[in-house]
Image (cartoon, rainbow, N blue to C red; front, side, top):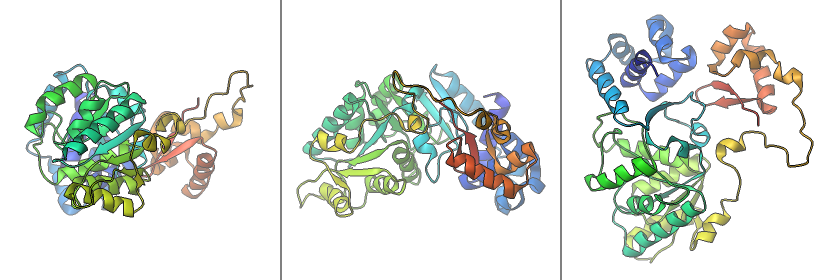
Amino acid sequence: MSPDDLRDWLRLLSCVSRGAARRLLARHGGPGAALAAGQAGWGQALSAEEAERLRSAPTELDRLVRRTQAWLAGGERRSILLLSDTDYPFALLNTADPPLMLYLDGRRELLGQRCVAVVGSRRPSPQGDENARHFAAGLGEAGFCVVSGLAQGIDGAAHEAALHTPGGTIAVLGTGPDQVYPLGHAELSRHIARRGLLVSEYFVGTPPMAPNFPQRNRIIAGLSEGCLVVEAALKSGSLITARQASEAGREVFAIPGPIHAPQSKGCHHLLKQGACLVQELDDLLAELPARGSPREAAIDPEPEAGAEATPEPAPQDDHPLLRAIGRDTVSLEQLSQRSGWPQDELNATLLDLELEGLIARLPGALFQRRRRA
């Protein structure tokens, strides 16, 4: 990302809500084009307050840009992931509110693995801590990347247990990527940056703020194909994560506990709501059948050894709309401009191409050509 692109992204995301930014990007294709469009091009996509902030630019923008550049330069494996990047996690992309930009520190390739969230109480019982470590280690040895939120208690135990397994671990932060919360996990955070992956949606320098943690939880849920709740009170962030996982179509798992223990009440509530009861690792693995990563599931499989490969029909490869999309992520308006097709005909043809598995419809009314095996 060039310095100008970084500045445009930071200006856009610091001035408007995620929903408004997504609308502008769908209409104009990128932050630079969105900023250049001005009030006339923004139309009804922004509120009056957002339009004014975007027009004048925040006074702290220069400082934020310098701080972000310094953070990126501070580690070889630090990077920024955009919604339009080809390695954006397929599972997260197919949620209601995927982050537009993520800060990464560590092994970026872990985003392409199958992931399972392991979450729970910040004050677990000794048995709960042991359960978190047992299941996280088992998932990691089975090749699943364990995702959690770096919080005290169950989160930290899950990260520690999965860190040295083949699956590894991802910690999703509720702070900026340069901040550690809680401070007691500073050493764990450094280990995860070296052997796993730290992920944050928040600007460099963002301190811990209560509203950010429930928002962080949607990323934990979105990255994962299942969410295991080890211990949780009835009113807890873990139940928020479980609800977000369920809303995203992910499987929810819960470990039962003593009927009078406060840390068990949340799990029992989930079980009443239809969560899968887990007593041993095989209960969990049985619900996560062996298959490729979520991203690979969207790609045509390679033919079996000895089987004849069926070539793709040339007319589909040469379809004018596929050529118009190219390797970009495009909006309907952009595609209409590129192809010159009227929107009613464009919509009908896009639906045909989607049903044939040649394009993917992404959140924010965007389209992308599917890669072929």
